[in-house]
Amino acid sequence: MRDRIVQARVHKNRQDFIESINEDDICRLASSYHGGDPCSFFKPPDRGSYNSCYFVEFGGSAGIGIGRSRGDDVTGSNGSSDGFNNSKKRGGDRWVVRVPLSPYLAMPAYDKLESEVAVMQLIAAKTTIPIPPLHAYSLAREKGPYGVASFMILGYVEGRSLNDVPFKSITKAQELNLHTQLADIFIQLRRLEFPAIGRLAPSADGKGGVEVRKAPISNAINLQEIEGLHPLRVMADYADYEDGSLASANGYVAMLIQLAHNAFKMGRNNVYSEADGSDSLYHIDQFETFVERRWLKSELDLGPFVLAHGDFRKYNLMVDDDLDIVAVLDWEWSLVVPLQFFSPPTWLTNQPVSALTLEFPYIEYVEKLDEFRDIVRERELARYGNELLSKEWAHVHENGGVMVSSALESWTDIDFVSGWYLNRLLHPSKLLATRRRGAAITAAQLGDERRRNLDSRIQQFMKQDPSRAELVARKVADYLAYRTERKALGVEDSEDEDQEKEEEDRYCQV
Image 1: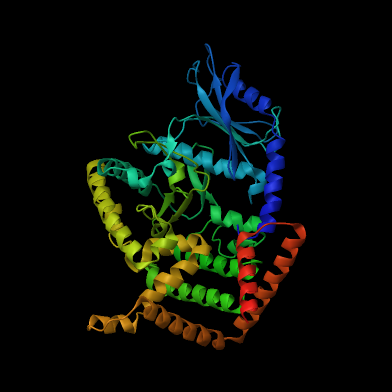
Image 2: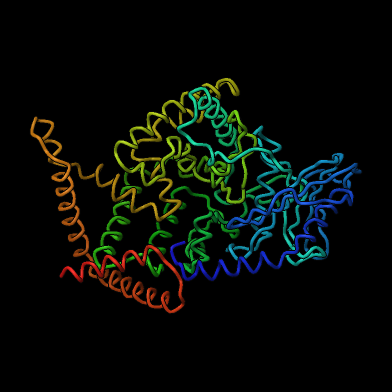
């Protein structure tokens, strides 16, 4: 979230929401699903952006849980829906009570949770991907006797986040083991195909299946909505079905590009100056043209559409000391997406997408990706006797494939991908051609050439349509108003403060 004023307000509301939760009630809630056994907390709560997690354990003997199998629903008059696990409860059980933090959600908490439960039930039934056991959940819309409405109770999984593992300390054998397990996860997800693009929910026929029947609201789109950029209004124009889902990959890409334009126009603090605004507007336009003419595969317009985790980053992978993956966490932003968005992890070399836009980090990434694709092929042949994902990923690195899909899903990456990768790909340096003939050039000369050429292209772009300059001027005015309001409210924004200091330094130099 770029708008620190909105962020400060949402953080306060989030904190107020957390403080309204009585931890003793959370323990009683857990006990109600564990035969009434007393429980205690074995570690402090973990409070993230979207959920507050409470870690409880039970001592002594325990009875049988309330008699329904995991995932079956009981709907009461208050609109609640609970799933129960009828396995024998044991003394020493450790559970996680997970409460969605409504102030950070652009949708009702029960709506988000319903999709997550549907995905977890599907994963448990159709794959061997390790996930925490789902013991209970509620999709209630109003607070119940324990002070919360929607919640989920999961089995606690021992381990540590892969994000806490120093990548430089990983041995080659450990890396092979890790990549083999990652391959097993991706090849199984790839086989879960659906007829539409969006979020999963329980089947409307009530027969226990799942289907796509919700709009494809991602983590990034959720943040845009909270920030007040109104992406859901844009998405409504692209929906092919009344529930907000889509039937076309081309339509999905067009929607994401329009969301990027909308975020640029609506954001209050994403343009510091006329030069900054012109640069950003040019690079969004260049990115859009590239996606439509070179990246998008029109033959995949009608599918396949496959299930993606939605937030498959290192901190959502729990591993043990041998780097065995013991659980994949947080399926709340899972989406059924077009095949071009079902990408391998961008963090195989422990670099962010912004770094991969540079030449040598991307070369290093592709080399590591080659190794990973070989493992994917081996695992597919071993499990299914045929190749599917390994063939589809054979050219995924071309035309910046993994970077482009990432930037489409998170519009703030467009500036990096277009500004670094596409400028280098679409506008190769003439000086580099000279060097290949034996002439020596310096990095400074190369940088000056690229900057001059880019400035010339931006000037031409801005002259082509006078409304572009008008938009940039409005964006600069929005930014100055944001800065004034931020200071009046006493809200900190390190990026804005650094920018203001740079402006003061330039003024002093003049």
